[in-house]
Length: 627
Image 1 (cartoon, rainbow, N blue to C red):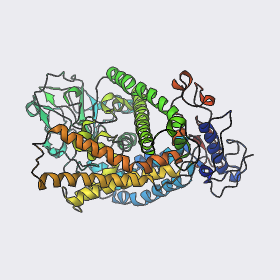
Image 2: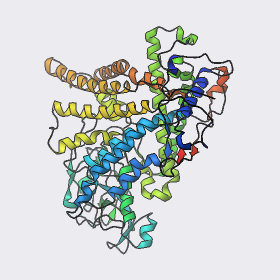
Image 3: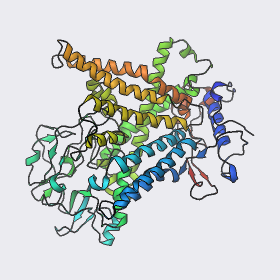
Image 4: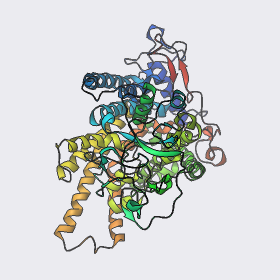
């Protein structure tokens, strides 16, 4: 029988590993016992789902249940946005978003306070999802107005060259004879592709009034009116990713006469399932790929123009953005590039790093420990050891992000095409990271605003766009830049604080936000130092060699991250995040002498890695697949 407090001081009372069990395995077992001891077993909850334990905890935990805890981010907001609320008669439905937002916020706060998992990655993800639920519901219910402003690129079949069309891959609409269009075919062009009222947009289709600024406040200035016309008069020059033009367009194949790409808006009188398909796509696309409000880091999303009586293919749109994000349009190329250039290298690297990290007590129990170090680490100078750990941490984070996010996108492409249709095509699956040249050219702003993954950028930048749209702040001012950085990094800090809190070991959840707040300070500092340098000295940006500017930016970024990343990275160790086994089959543990002798198993995933079924008193609240 085991009795372990939920937030015990286990990280401060270390027990030496037995000869049969290495340090990492010992703490995995202790933390999992701690989780099961804290699990809510009152009223016979989960008594058939967990090991038999007795508990002296003063705080109870709940399992991370699927589908329950996905409903607040994906299901409930999508159902609400599928209900028409633009007209005067349905105004009360739009007002109802406020009590709905309050309820969803309460739901996600409860998730942060009480949900955890014996799977160390899932435990951290529970807090991330809870915090993101608060941020994302504010985004889709308050900061943006999807039914008024949202539209996505869709493909449909033309029948008899008339306006009676249905969306390719939508069996329910075809069978029911319903149109896939969420608005009448717009009249500006022959194939009905142009935006209603010929709205001005930038390269990603943002309507004027929705600023395209992100974490770095970087906005495309070359906004144009998009008009469908015969020939290529408006695109005789090839675009880059954000609306800038260069060179000469190469000949491109045209789309067949039977299909066309078009802007699909919200249609109030469409069947409910058609509206739900539209609204679910809106809430499920964190980077808003395929929408007119796609984040500006990505290549542009808009229907291709027409040449004569035919519409051009998607290849005529630029597939590389200014920030270095790329996409392809063929499944074969996408699968090859994703598998062999991203997933397999990341798999190999994270496997090696998992061995190195779990061999260091710093990554197993956190920085507050008195355990002896391995000989190669004990011989290093403290400063060198500090930098070595930071490099390993950064590489581990990068490889994990590449592995998880690319694997998720690959699964969408391979297995979800029958369900998602056009949405599962490679065109909707751009690269995870941008070009590192953005870091060299723009410093810390390029690091966070372009090169680093932009998964949460739309939600992070939505409050700033709202303030700009309604005139609370003025674009281009120091106050606007400071507000943009503060809003984005406070939200990012909230995400990682919540992730830290929901882990089983005792962590210092208030530490990770410091890293992100200091990142905002660093971006403002670097921008203003650069302005002072060019304005107060005889130096000019144009006369300074590019390699000098790039070297200075790189030095500043590395120095600033080295000084400010430790609150986040140290807390990863306290939270037990590095105890997670990232790969099922290890190549390095059995084939090398790295790691502990007692932990050189080839197969790494044990029973606690896999989901388990939890059956509680309530079918809705207490029952589901625990991850």
